[in-house]
Image (spheres, rainbow, N blue to C red):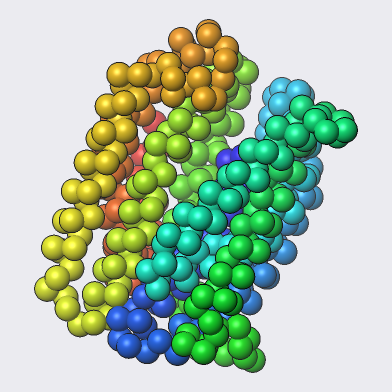
Length: 350
């Protein structure tokens, strides 16, 4: 799962970079240029999807046998990724549509699309993993297949919405002109540092799980359970950071530089308040949170200390992640890369 996220988040940097530029153009009242950025980003994401598919479907079989000690874990990983790899096409293109919706302040649509994806994923996972309605039980392969189909549903929903509701004329979407080198270069200049930033961040996390796997399967299970609880609790921060990045870029596009810090302060206060509430719930009721991810009582008991540390990390991250995304939102993506690299170096060394 973490290896898959390395590919997805590195690719997502292209949509994030495009989102920053599209928000800037909207702030400058240059709406028709939004479509040009959008279309060129789709070109780049299709190419990256092919490379990502190759890395997920084939590269893993070459390198993973040298990384993982447990044969059982290795086999499960390869079975999962062989199917999950197909989702990279749907997932990455969906991210570009979500970036567009964030830029034009239609974030409710992202919520609806994610709710649809989650519903399809949960229903199909239950059917395919356990073998319901005449299907044979596929186990972990069923989990991967359910995710792929769910991502395809999300992409279809977003395409239909943008075509029907937003139309093509206002933002000049889906014209797909001949690739322009200057436009591709501009998107790349903003996106590449973000991509490297995400790659370094997720690769650090991947290394962490490789280290834990060497200790034992029980420790790896604890780490994955707490990671899942962490990611669930962190979802509001990702939403706030994406919004903050677009808001700041839009304000700069309007030339209202004196309003940047006021907007940033509001975003940070809102994020800290929300995450503080979630951390308190996790602290007071740890068992219900952990039971979402496992029914094993020993794993639940052994995960308490990790969950407590995670709650502390969440409070720090509630404003740190917004700050680093706002740095990117100003266009200073190379600075954000330097900050991330320094933090990950300390993390991996420790």
